Image (cartoon, rainbow, N blue to C red):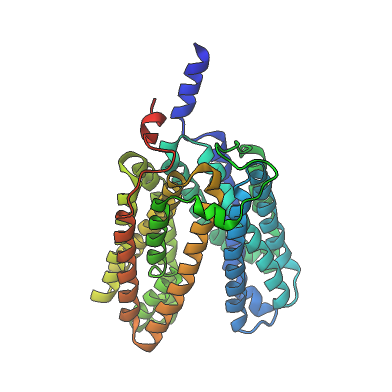
Length: 417
């Protein structure tokens, strides 16, 4: 009698050891590399790097990370490779970020940043597949929402720590300090994340399906969902452009220095809202359905973009608009991955997460370039209008993508048994 009761209790518990371990790994890893990112512009200037260097470093690193996500998806489809891939990826990010402290030229930092971002991209699909395995099908929203909240908490703590430590340690000291949270992340993942279960229907040992064969196993509902994600992605742009717009709006009244400080404060508020809303968004998705809620999350971004078009925002209005953008990001990150976990067969879940991450990465690149170009050539309103149109299209496509989750019909019912 005790065994069934124990299993029943386990099925009701979403915050498993594995979910906690993966959440802690995301918290500490982001804490470390976001601390480094916060001081990166100043550090590059200290080694004599030209202004274009930061763009080259970030562009090359993000591009390589997108390719690594596809390769990581292939690795994530092999259950026995998932945990080792994650451990190596977390250690790679920690060690390369620590290595910034010893470089003397910006090309050396480019190499380290690219290697670290490849490790970060490559580990993602394996981590997400393990996270989906940690909970019952009807609890994926809570699990991914928790991971997203921890990730964003790290993104808030990183810059705050860098600011606090900079005066005491100097830039190179802060970069050396990042080894502590980075290694803690890798150890949390290594100790607490579970070894992967063998997926039902997984290919026989010794055979390696091609990418085309794996993609053929994605259900039609997943491809339709992915079309909506991509449409949203080529509209929704990087939040750094919101910082720029806020600074442009406030500078005539407050001066450049105060406007810049308030804009950074607004972005910090955005990240706090993102972290606070991530778990509730995922938990609500488990209860009422993820597809419609994700579409609502996309439409929240449309409202924020419209606010920048039709208002001349004051500081209180900017607070609301940045808050709405934070809610949108929380809904997107928590619900896209948890819905993908339900739509994908377990045997190709790693590849599915890799494709999802790559679609988002390409979308981010396209949206930031197009919005930036429209902003420069026509005006900010044109950029926000473009973003609103494609983000709304993404909401329509996701909501109408239909189809029952693969292997999870009745998932909410089973999770509550």
